Amino acid sequence: MKIQRRDELNSFILIAVGSFIMSIALNAFLFNNDLVIGIGGISRMIEKWLDIPRNYVYWFISTFILLMGSLLQQDRHKGDFIFRSFAGIIWVSFVFLPLTKSLTAFRLPLPEPADFLFMPVTSSLGAVLLGLGIGIIIKSGGSTCGLDLIAHVIEDKKNIGKPNTMRVLDSLILLMGTITFIGKDVFNVSMIKPTLLYISSGLILIYLLPKTVELIDGFDKTFPF
Image (cartoon, rainbow, N blue to C red; front, side):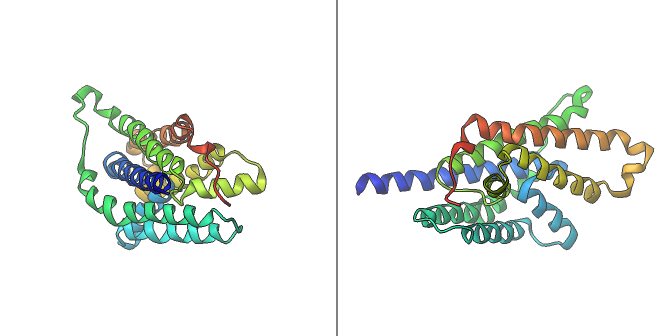
């Protein structure tokens, strides 16, 4: 019993750590460039459209996905999974995203000739950190209740790999981000370079994120759905 309680405590601590890493990745490395990916990216866009704080939007969407996923199948281990996943949602939504929001103004001190590399470099770092945070949460018996859970359901129903599903969904979110943050200026000749930098940085993010999760074997964790 003591060993079981200690394991549960370790899992919740790791979920908190993963949530903290995720929040730093989103605020310090992605949102400062308006780079959007996953549920965090959708939350950022809705914040811009409707002026609703991103953390509340993140909480609502993630909780909805968790509830929908929990209805798909009855499983005796589902309760632990839901509890751990919801704990992660709370950590991200109401603790770490607000706590690290000021990091949105963070800027890497790159030398002036290499300043154009700011967006690709920060998107790469953000992808690695975000993937690390997601992987830690999944390995700890939970889920971010975002694209990882949606990808799992699609894999279970359609036998399509999670990384490929995440990349397709994130590509659609990146397209929405391009329309949201660049808009009609995407056709402006003077905006060709910033637009290409934005899209290429987003593609780097889309490629590296699932790779990072795979490297720490996060996708090997079986969800109870």
